[in-house]
Every structure is written in C-alpha cells, then in structure tokens.
Amino acid sequence: MGNICGHSIEKTSRPKSSSYLKYVENPIVHDFRILRPLGQGGFGKVFLVEQRSTKQTYALKCIEKLMLKQKHCQNKAVMERNILRDVESPFIVNLHYSFQTASKLCLVMDYMEGGTLFSLLQKQRKISEDQARYFAAQIVLGLEALHDHDIVHRDIKPENILLDEHGHVKLTDFNVSDKASSNSSSYSGTIEYIPPEVINHDIHNKQVDYWGLGVVLYEMLMGLPPFVALNKKLLVEKILTEEPRFGSSVSEDAKDLILRLLKKDPKERPSQISEIKSHKFFSGLDWDHLLEKSWEVPTNSKDLVRTAYISEISNDEDEVDDPEFDYDDFDYCRTQEVLKGL
Ligand SMILES: Nc1ncnc2c1ncn2[C@@H]1O[C@H](COP(=O)(O)OP(=O)(O)O)[C@@H](O)[C@H]1O
Ligand SMILES: [Mg+2]
Image 1: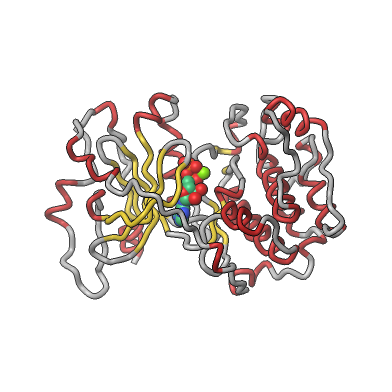
Image 2: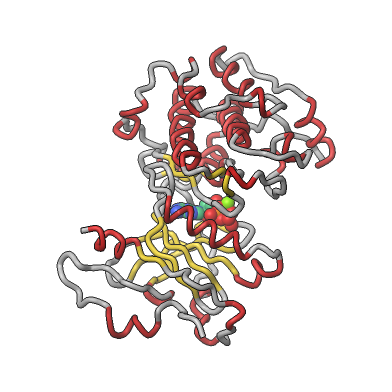
C-alpha cells in the first residue's frame, strides 16, 4: 500500500509551531481550507486555499487520477509536477508541495492574485503596446527558463499566463509540456494557438512555443487571435495558409516580430530565444531589470470567479484506497528542500 499523503508521518513528525519553522512537512488535503474555485481545465480544478497552520494562501490544483487513467496520460501529471519542482524562475509559477489523495493528485502553488491574461483580455479586449511588450518580455523569460531545461511548454495561451497583483507574469499548466528532445508529434490543445507543424503531425520542438508567443502578442494588440473562424475546419485552413492581418495601431516593430514568430515553417521562426530578445520590438527594454519594473495591473482585472464547489475535494477520505491509483514518490515539499540546503 502506498503512502497516501504522508498520513502516518503527519501525526508524528510535524514540528510544533515555532516562529520560523512554521511549515507543514507532508501536507494532506485537510491542511488546506478551500476558499473558492479559481479555475478549471481539462484534468481537474484549481482552488484558492488557505494553509490552516500558517494562514498562507495558495492555489491548489487537483488532478483526477481516474481522468488521467481514462485518457492514458498518467505520466503527464508526474511530468507537470517534475517541471514545476525543477524549473525555478520568477516567471514560472512556484510549486510548494505535491501530494495525493485516493483519487486526486494535488499541486500546491503560489496564488496569483491578478488572475490570467485571459481574464484581463476578456475585460480590456486589447492592451497598449507598452503593456503588451512588458507581458511578452516576461513570457519570453519564462520560456527561456523552460527551454534552458530542454522543456517545451506546448500550450502557451492567455489561460495559462498568470498575473500577480503587480502585473508580473508566471507561466503555468505543464500538462502537455514535454522534453524538447522527445521530438513529440502528438498534441492536444486549443486550436487557435496550435501551429501548422502540430496540425500536420510533423515533429515539433521549441519553435512551437515561439508560435504561441506570436499568437498571444497578436491577441494582446488586436483583441483577437490572428486566426479565427466559425468552425474547426476553416480555422485549421486559415492557420495553415493565411497570413495575419494587422490594424493601423500596431507598430512596424511589433508586426515584424509577430510575422517572424508566426512563420508557417518552424525552421523560418527564430531558432533561439536570444533572437527574440534582441528584436527591435524589445529595444530599450532592460532584460536584467525586468523584475524591478513595476506596472500595476488595472484593479478590475482581478479574477472574480466566485461560483462554489467548495466542499468537493474534502470527501476524499471515504474513498477506497486502490493501489492501482497510487503514484510512487509523488509527494514533494519545497520547504524541506530549502531546509536541507541550509
Ligand atoms: N497559481 C494560480 N493562481 C491563480 N489562478 C490559477 C493558478 N493556477 C491555475 N489557476 C487558474 O486555474 C485555471 C486552470 O489551471 P491550469 O493549471 O491551466 O489547469 P488545466 O491543466 O486544467 O488547464 C487557470 O487558467 C487559471 O484560471
Ligand atoms: Mg490550463
């Protein structure tokens, strides 16, 4: 029988609360009070939670094991956990803990108060070129951190771009991410953001993320993705054959960068992230000091999802513990890693 959320450890080895050792070693789902849902994706739900012992708020992503099994992608959740654990960057959402219940895999991450770029664009439709440059630059730095680890995100779209209260960006959702070296050619995602080589089932690589960046940059400036259609067939055709069209408000530099990122042939897109960073669109931007730059996200951009399925994950203890659904070695605690390193 596997270790379900460290139940046994929980009772014996948690430190008594002291002023600085206020952490939970092997958390279980009941260590977190659910405040409200934050979002929902293909495999599970994300909740705003409060850690009872520290009163710290986090985002808790719960992934259904059954769903993973049915879709034959158990390894995807482990891959997502590994990426979040291993890639440390100010532009990638921070993972604090991972643990499992009988039916769910749980990831405890930084809560991003500003919501998503998607919710921001829904309210604002489009944003100024300066704001778009600031967001795009941070997405570039997030991608750089991933690509340095040889990981391709493969699902760059506004729903997966989180914002904190100051407008700092963090990438999330590594469900479909993969090793660049895997030369993967399968994929599932939102069609508007899928590049031609994926539609054609060709081998694809880091350039997939440059396409995603191009689509997101276009959408920030124009208010819609570059290719939209009433049905899937037409949309696919446009992605494969049509050139993006721009409004008069988009600068020549922005156009030039977007057109390079949206080249149909991935070999014609930038080959390295450094080529994107040195593009004219970003001239004048101090990459090293990007973090210190402060730009307030409009307050109305805060995520206001308030519907309730609050008690949903708490009933898990009644479920039968099935070894088939036990993930070896899923539990992780960043605090322990930090303490080990001291
Ligand atoms: N750390 C977070 N802080 C705030 N909201 C989040 C956070 N993580 C996810 N969300 C919300 O939950 C949604 C789904 O999360 P995501 O990780 O993309 O799951 P899925 O793999 O199911 O798409 C996001 O689009 C966002 O709205
Ligand atoms: Mg998502």
